[in-house]
Amino acid sequence: MDGSQPITPATTQCLDKLQSVREQVSELAPSRAGGRLTRATGLVLEAVGLQLPLGAHCMVEIRDGHDFSEAEVVGFNQGKLLLMPFVDTAEMVPGARVWPTLPPPGAQTIGSKRVPVGDNLLGRVVDARGRVLDGRGPLHNVTHATLTAPRLNPLDREPISEVLDVGVRAINALLTVGRGQRLGLFAGSGVGKSVLLGMMARYTQADVIVVGLIGERGRGREVKDFIDNILGSDGIKRAVVVAAPADDSALLRLQGADYATRLAEDFRERGKDVLLIMDSLTRYAMAQREIALAIGEPPATKGYPPSVFAKLPKLVERAGNDAPGKGSITAFYTVLTEGDDQQDPIADSARAILDGHFVLSRSLAESGHYPAIDIEASISRAMTALIDAIHLQRIQYFKQMLSRYQRNRDLISVGAYVAGSDPLLDQAIELYPQLEAFLQQTMNQRDDFDHSCSRLAQLLPERPEA
Image (cartoon, rainbow, N blue to C red; front, side, top):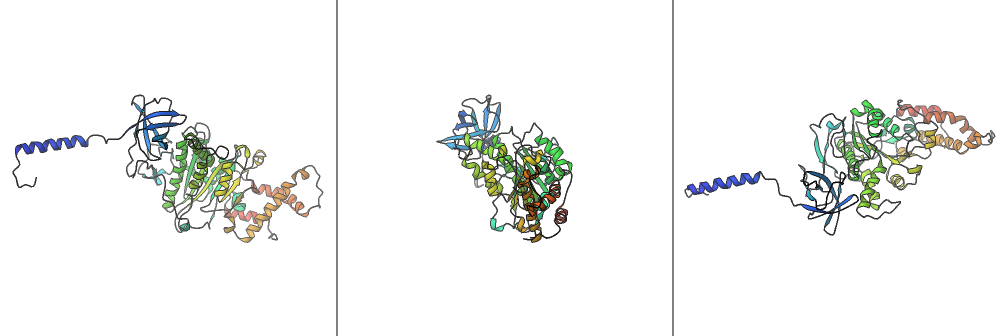
């Protein structure tokens, strides 16, 4: 109405009805296209009637609309969506309705996942979706961010040039770690990797610690014991723990690793030095294998599909230094070596993409040697850029003496070696008790970098010839 004509009672009545209809329509829920389940095979559901991107979330009907289960789109085939639910599918029925989940506030598409981040998560334990597990009430004043951060330009990253003190003598002195380095902790079961991780979590000089417990036994000792006893009350104050235990779905285990990395990235963006501990990279790979095989991807190396080896570097490369003057993420990933096989496909792949690795020896652990780090089999690729030439020569001499003794240990034990036959072996035999004592440390003992180096210099006071 432009006001040039008088408003009649009939016009007023029509306008009132129109406004009433508008109000009623505004109160209606948004319309969403729905689909239906046509097949359930193993871990995968097939649905028709929907067109959604990979990674989008859906709600699948259970028991005539009374309950719904969340699922994620993991593939599609000839017009059918392949879904993987987050929980058990025992009560789903053929033809169950499938509804797309509305995008969360701030998300650009239905497939965007947003998770809580920020300083208010410090001291808290959350699951792979950011929901609290510690019974201390809901999270307050947290911001939400997408699960994946923008990729950093590798040429803009600051090189690894600063020593990171991890509080463990054998690592500080002989396998020096740099801030922003990414390392693997290779170990079989029961050789003390969790204890070593806890030592580094408590003693490492870092502003924030992010711990991702991926695939651990949630109802056993691993998750709760790591938080209460290994990480401790002092460690948890500056830490965030993301727990995706073994009884979570493969999707949640994958998301737990991504979420822990995203939290570390957020703290790095705020200019903080972050220690990221992920236990374990192997179970992350197993979760991806579970998904890939379920949707029909052919197995390649020892049952692992190619997508597993494609996802590992994408996860690991997110850690590291930011641009000069900004924050950093120093990451330790545990790698389970089945049957202590160092040529396991995941272990072999991890060695190629990490900046070094520490190998824990079962024989050392069984002899009561802790931490059970096999110095000969371990390496820090950034070490040569972090220490001076004299320190490097001492390390080489230390390893030479240790290796010479270990290779002749059997001869020495049975008394078959005659003193004086090999001058280097004579030196190794004389030094070995001190070398062995240098490598051992209790879990409640901290040895900083300077003290570790001075002890190495006292053990080998003279500069060994190159």
